[in-house]
Length: 482
Image 1 (cartoon, rainbow, N blue to C red):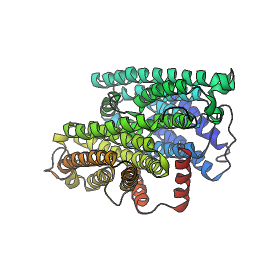
Image 2: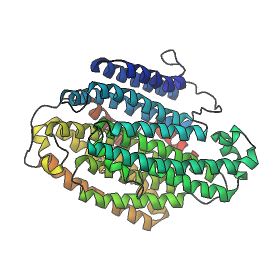
Image 3: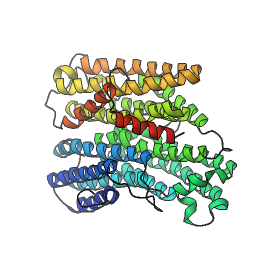
Image 4: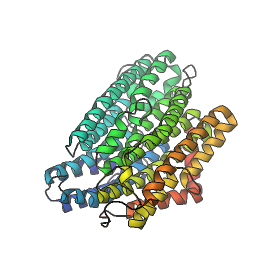
């Protein structure tokens, strides 16, 4: 129990109640603080699930070792992003980019988005999970277009249209799963309950499962940002508020990934179904290689890191496609490290673009000289996301490359090639931004440094030392994933 609430109820009800209150309250300072407090409450409830008694699976709610990883990560990054957002958005209000009315809408949508993502993670009903993913998508669409500029509205519409296509494909795949289950579990809601489905999956029609997974992979893969389904992602990152860019890369992509993992486990439980790993390996590797080369062509700093997110989601999907205890462990670790690192990078990028008044890489130079703390924070984030030791992403990539070399050397060579190409692009872009001749404004940063350095500290600790209970927990989840 946390704050007098059942933890699962707290994870769901706190953001819902906060969204209603935030939509009604005027005044920026009060609503920003309430947004932070609500996000902290959700995180404390999620964290208590790690040490407390978990509820038994029900018709709609499930908490197990797999989704607790996602729930805790989601609420933690949601909390730190709300801290960053409080000071970041204040500057947007002062400069007139946002009005008080839009600001009230922004905070209400932030908590609605958190509710949608939390609900997707704890759902035991695959139909309810689909609804929750759609809710989280729609709220982020509205937040991407909050500046109401032509470019922001275009990005929001592109996101909405492509996201709608993806979610429609996912809905069709969900219906096919129900059709495959109906002859075995009968009519009614049992055909949508994931714990029932995975227990009885061995008797399902394998052909229907195969077709369903293809639609589910294409549908949720659009949300993950896999190439060539990624077109919405760079625009959404570039035109929306930077805290939403942090949430998109650090959290929302993980929601769709979680859905894919659940359905992958379902196929793995049926001996006659196709191996889902093949499709995941191909799409993951294609996304990695495509994004790695596209990084060289970026001229906008937020678009640069949007393509970096596509690259890393490709790595994660590739890891889970390879499967096995070591590759799955690497995939889980990489997912956590990417969420922490990429959100930290966007915290830095958000402040830099506010100070310089531009997102153009050509106009941002010498940040380590003009703003040493911010500049070196960005350097640390890019070093981490590029996979250099001793940071956490190096460890996950090392485990993945090792596992892949042992099983398929040619795939490992392609993986390493993609990683090296991406490393070269990030190094090339970072050099000018961090160490070039200073350009632009030298006014002090307005937003808090605390969220950025808290994330980077966790990534450094994970690269040096993972506590034995965390290792054992991840190993157990890796075995569950097959």
